[in-house]
Length: 154
Image (cartoon, rainbow, N blue to C red):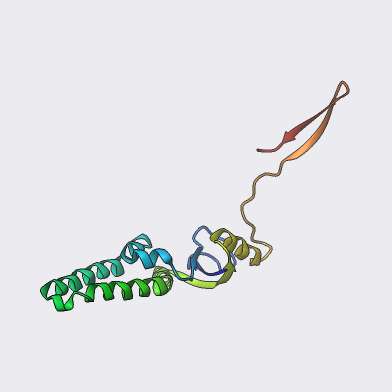
């Protein structure tokens, strides 16, 4: 099970479900370990991504100057990948908070969909998720044949 941090936008009331509610999985990211710079850009952490690119260019430039420093890019890459994989979700949460989101709670769930359902189940009774129009079945009798029909929007 993973922890999902729930963030809601400042413009929305505290007890209201909104499309602006964000769920951030607070766990180790294998994708961030494999491709940390791509992960940063994918999650719209632009300044960190540009800083990472510049740092990789700088470290590679230093390594080219002398063969003694050839091990530095590999070590830097491994350490940076681990840092992004472990701390990346916290950076995402901080970026959301800077853009007007507030911490609302934590949900334990297997997936994002389950986290959203668990969060919705915790909300007060007055808040409900959008539902489809219920379908009802009617019994219609025609000349000794039983036929079922549906009514509703579906």
